[in-house]
Picture 1 (cartoon, one colour):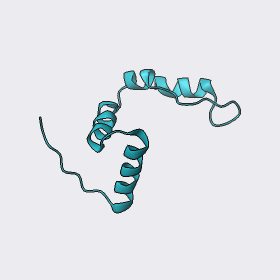
Picture 2 (cartoon, rainbow, N blue to C red; picture 1 turned 90 degrees about the vertical axis):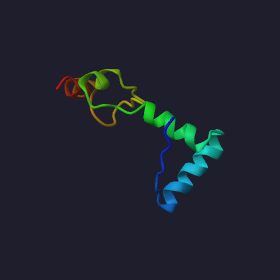
Picture 3 (tube, rainbow, N blue to C red; picture 1 turned 90 degrees about the horizontal axis):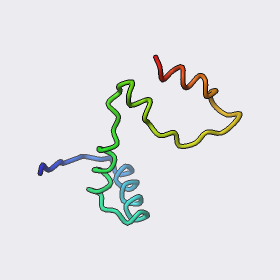
Picture 4 (cartoon, rainbow, N blue to C red; picture 1 turned 180 degrees about the vertical axis):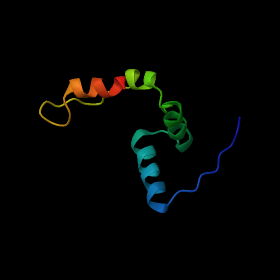
Amino acid sequence: MKQLLVKLADDEYHVLERYCKMTGRTKSAVVRYFITNLSYGGKQDLLHRKINRIAPGKGKLLSELIREMRI
């Protein structure tokens, strides 16, 4: 197992601390979770990424999003 030292600004560290307290997870667990969910930028990643929310009348049309994913 490798060890990682990360320098954070005070406000970034406080955000991480609050998130950990809110979720009950350790800082290491949070960092590991987000690293395992990083996208590598390939077209496959765009096709399999999760869409958090689709709201009618806001943002782009679904057809536009699909067209962008295929580029």
